[in-house]
Amino acid sequence: MTDTAGGEETAAAPRSWGRWIGRPGHSLTRRLIWLASAWIIVALLLAGWALTSQYQESALRRLGFVLGDTIDDVVLATTVTPEGVTVAEIKDSRTLRPLSGKYWAIGELDGQGGVQVLARSPSLVGEDLEVPPGLAHRLESAFGETISYNDIDPIGRPLRVAASLKSMPGREAPLVLMAGINRSDIDTDTRQFATFTWTALLILGLGLVVAVFLQVQIGLRPLFGLRNEISDVRKGKAARIVHSYPVEIQPLAEQVNRLLDHNQETVERQRTHVGNLAHALKTPLSVMLAEAGTQQGPLPDMVRKQTEVMKAQVDHHLRRARAAARAQLLGERTPIAEVLDEMAVMLERVFEWKTVEIDWRAPDDLGFRGERQDLQEILGNLMENACKWSKRRVRISAGATGLGQMVVVVEDDGPGLPEDQREAALQRGMRMDETTPGSGLGLSIVVELTRAYGGKITLADSDMGGLKVLLELPTAEI
Image (tube, rainbow, N blue to C red; front, side, top):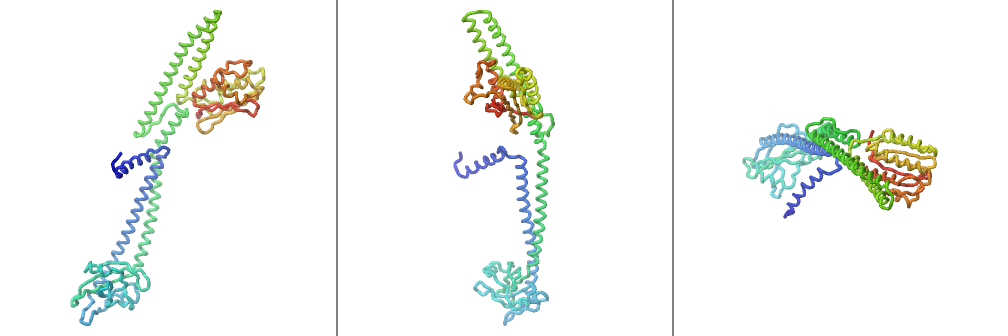
């Protein structure tokens, strides 16, 4: 916290700049192109302004030299007599030709801020050069110096005028000497130069922007390649980053590979730990079940029931741990069409006694981002449940949503399931019909594995008359 308003502004500026630089969702390519383009535009605008201004100043300076020479000619041709001021003929045809665009005049200050003309060039044909307000004061302040300004000649053409206050021999009061020349040609040349300059700078600016765009695209191409490789790893199309990159980003690629290796090692350790734990727990539980089965009485029955509960809990948590470990592993992908075909063939044979027909459809390039064993367990439970409750037909369709997810829909033509019972059906060990064989664990296993992979399962009514199961799972490109 700062003590002054100025300090607060100074402290806030870097934070705002930092937020803009690191703002998420903004394209680095677009940012570089915009920054370079903005600088190019500003630089070219300044260059265009400087060039046109300098050209105009140079042209006016040349006119100033011409007007200065005219004033010198007038001074040389001027004679001061007691009767007044006379000017000999100046050998400049433009000052002799009426309204030719080149003029001169001699006058004196009238003491009221104006100039009283004493003599003028024949080209003025009796007219006077206009005197802007304040010129008399400026001439007195800059005695002997030449002051230039813009004016209009008697017929309305733009004029460049130079005026100077000088002392003349034989005269006490100084004289005002003025010379003017038509500046139309200078203005036309300046406009033409400005048009050519701005056109050339516009073409140059467009060329520079295109060059910046190409430079950024080519310069950032390695970053695009690294992004695509990381995307392939995330989608399961590759296990590592294999290409080499410039020295500026090669360390990043190496760090990503180290992270992938570490993730692989961590998952493998989790798998090994889960396997060891399963083996260490299942063997004593199996022994307890076997021993309890050989005995009769309340105690053996209680031991057997509690052991079965313990074994079910162990299976449940080990399955969740194994699925979670697999879900963290990048690079795993399983074609869903192959698994659906395999499950359909097997279940049609199992339920051959009721002539169940399984109609499935899935794109060949659609894949599940996970292990084949888990997908078999998920789809196998859903398809088996549909076959069990169906009359004759089971329909399965799969497709990608375009959001890194795919949807598998499993439907049957069975009796369906009331809406108020669907949530209970997804709970572990819940059976909707005790007369139907099963443990009630199928759907709960599907729910556990699906959630471990970040997916979702929903129950709804099917237009076939039975139950529709919508399964969302992460997808991977094949």
